[in-house]
Length: 252
Ligand SMILES: [Zn+2]
Image (cartoon, rainbow, N blue to C red):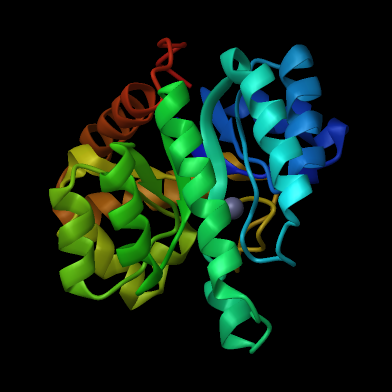
C-alpha cells in the first residue's frame, strides 16, 4: 500500500521508522519552503517520494518568498515527484481570513506553470468551487493534477475525472457522505488513498497509517462492490503510475 498524501515532516523521527516499515511507500508533501527542505533531508535517510510546495491554508506568501520557493524547486527538481501541496484557501476564506484572493491564485498559477516547465504533476488542495479554478489552470498549462481529499458537487467531480486527473480519499470515507459520493463517481483507475497524516481521523492513531489505508480500501471495496484485493492492487498501480514510481515489494 501507498499513502499518496502525508505530511511526514510533521511526525517525530522515531515514529517515521515504524510507519514507513508498515507500507510500500509514501508521497510526502510540503507546506512551505522549510517543510520542502526538511523533506529533502528525510529523503536522504528514508526511501520516500517527496513534493515541494506551498499549502494555501496559511498567510499568503510575499512575492520575494515565492521566488525563493520557485528557485529552490528548480534547483532540486530531480529529487521531486511532484509540486505540492498547492491550491486555494477554502477554509481560511470561510473564516473570513482571506483578504487578497488574487494573491493565492497568483501563487497557484506560478507553481502550476513551473510544474509544466519541469514536467511534474501537482498535488492539489482545491475543494468545492476552488476545483474549477484549479481545473482551468491545469488545462492552460497542460499539467496533471492529484486532487487530494477531494469534495465537490457532482458536476465538478465529473469535470475533474473527464480531464483525466486523479482523486484521493482519506479515512473520512468511512462516515462522510461527500467523500463516499466522490468514490461512487470516480473510476477505480483514477482513485488513490491517503491519510493526510498527522490529521487526526476519529478512531485511528495518527501513526497507524497502515490501518487507516486498509480501512479506506475496505470501504472502497464495499462502495464499488469489488474485492479488497482488487481495490488494493489498483490503488498501488494508480499511485505508481501517477507519480512515475518504481514498483516496490507488493506484499506490503
Ligand atoms: Zn495535506
